Length: 438
Image (cartoon, rainbow, N blue to C red):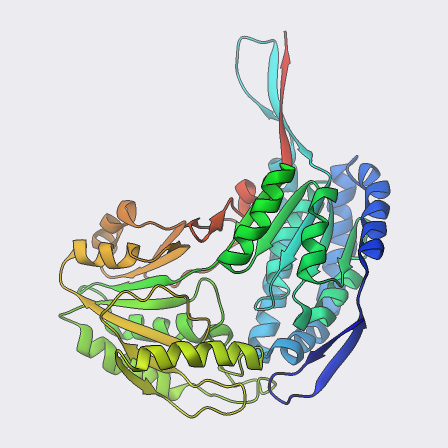
């Protein structure tokens, strides 16, 4: 059986790939296990390999990798290039900090010496989506590998070419991309020691239930419906420009995209007018053109899902389109909708609501079942007062939410379990082993 990938803008086939059987995938895991113990022996050698081989490979092939990403899932090419560069920055962070992250940590007790070791668990399976097909793999796999683990990648089928290119660039016997479907991936959970999953909440819940029966460690970054709160002390120009970037980047297909815009009543009309002006300026079209900011959604099925959500919202709120639908492109869209919309919209649709008091803003921000990130705009001391009451894993003040290798990334509620990135996320797939010497 084969998987074909298609360009969502042109409809043309990008590639065709033979799928791995369960037996094929199992054999790859067995071979990784044969090499993992040796790989785990020397952190200095692992750091050197990242520095001398992996970084150089990604740097050399950055343009080819970015182009393949855009061809398979439609991300504007300028954003694909930025994604590869960001992944290289993560490599640099790990090269610089792996020793301090994974070296034993001394703890003062009554013992002659007591400390905590951070030993690798074994093999980690990364099950990753299509929307950030390099960065999401990097933040799950790179820390796991440099910690001494082996890893296998089950990527979304529509970015199979990217998945195999990543295997080529990592160039390690302890890493393999598996060309398999979701059911096969789930059936392999018992053969690995940990699972890193990024994707929808229902799928994550199913994977977590299987992992729970097997007592496997999981880290999950799931859905998000991030609020973007605009206080009456905000710079409306800055807020409107960043709202456009935060909602429309990656064609609106980002878990940490600002999706619900909660605006103080005193500045609602001004913000809406300036956001509409910014939306109308966005260059929409061919993702291979460097000045395109909004391209197609990743597939016809993804477009249909977003269109159904827009249809629901249009019957209950005021909706404005800034352009026309063409192929898999949904134009920038603003919806004024006063009720609590529970679904995550994975497309270029901004939902606007107004509030009058801080308590109303907090209530609206927290009414979602998700708790990934929150962006607050206004005077910093005023905005920071809201932080303890916000139900989210990350709060950014006068900035859109983004991931940074130096800071933990993840959410609460139905947005996930555990953390990625920073020393905290990098240690997720380690055995924190206590050692006491009397």
